[in-house]
Length: 137
Image: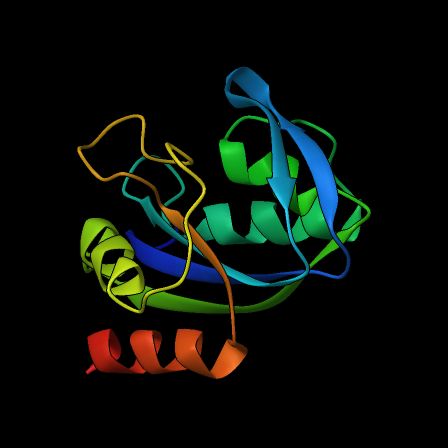
């Protein structure tokens, strides 16, 4: 079993697109970089990130979480992943992303907490790196 922890996925929408996000329905995504804050404290721990990578590569078709639909779209690509082993900072990451002033996709990935969203963007990739670095210390 991999260590538990939190993670940040940086995803690029290469062009404006609409994507059906499970129960959230159709959502519009402008071109640009998005950041998704997640956590993996259940069975498998941070091996969940490997599952996200397989979906982004087209090697896994099962969609379980909101982010799976985004990663599985032909219009997006997984740019980078930051992991925070043994740290439960998913909502802190989401809050820090919200403080950057970038947009959000309402209710995305936040069905089990009080955050307005766990997906923020589009914004510049350097902004997302700064957020990850500040919480990684």
